[in-house]
Length: 146
Image (cartoon, rainbow, N blue to C red):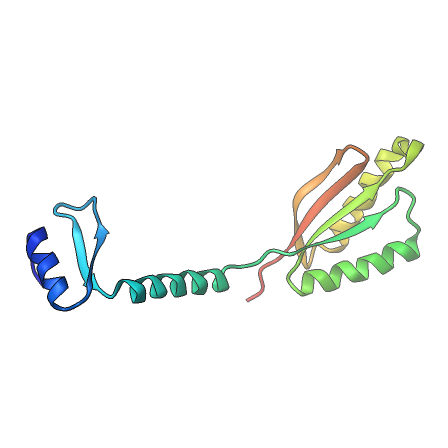
């Protein structure tokens, strides 16, 4: 360990039959290390894989309603939504309007708000109901559990 000139560092790396790898070029003086380059690359890839494995994967489950969904169907789909939230998934609940049923926009919004109110204890609304084309949708994310 110490400060070497580039020539001395290269000579030392050759003597050890290793590679001179620049770690940080922005530092004054640039930081280099004498290592086995293939092992260095392997370790970097391994660290990247560990970081990717620890990353949280967001899964969004979709639940589809019609503007005039009956109470039984609503309860059935609500039961699925509860299970999804308990499993830690986000929910994208949407009302699909076909043909002239777009005149029932208010019913669709009421349905989605009712779902949000029923799932209030398990999740919080990330995006309030809004219309995009023939779909009115809302996103609910699970509450953090400790």
